[in-house]
Each structure stands twice: as C-alpha cells, then as structure tokens.
Image 1 (tube, rainbow, N blue to C red):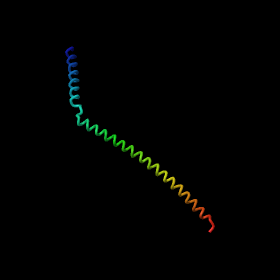
Image 2 (cartoon, helix red, strand yellow):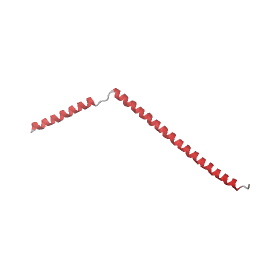
Image 3 (cartoon, one colour):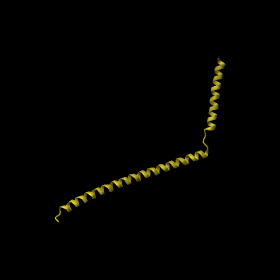
Image 4 (cartoon, rainbow, N blue to C red):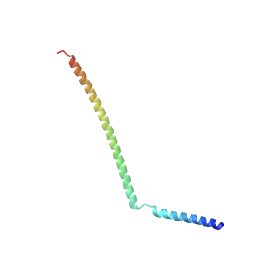
Length: 91
C-alpha cells in the first residue's frame, strides 16, 4: 500500500511537471505576435477616439438642428401673426 501511494505521488508530481513544461513551452507569445497585439491595441484606441469625436460632432449637429427648428417655429408663428394682422387691415 505504501508503494502504491508513493507511485501515485510520483505520477502526480511527474504529470504536473510535464504539464508545466508543456504549457510554458507552447503558451508563450512571439515578438511578432506581441507587436501585432500592440498594433491592434493602438488601432482600437484610435477608433475609439474617432468614435467619441463623431459622437460629439453628432451631438453638436443635433443641437444645431434643434436651434434651427426652434427658430423656424418662431418664424412660422410670426408669419401667421403677420398674416392675421394683414387680414384685419381695412381694404
């Protein structure tokens, strides 16, 4: 029984050693992969900055549209008031 226990322990330790060696040998990233990852990160940052800029621009344009629509509504109101006043004038 003692031999079986020591064999199991040796097997577990050996398995862990082989697994560690395998993962460390196969799991690393090459310099090219790291460079590509950095390039992709930079591209993501650039695209996020561009997206934020476009969102800000869109918000500004929507505000401008609201201002123009408000001014048009005021002009339409003045136009109707003027038309009503002109109809009240004697002919």
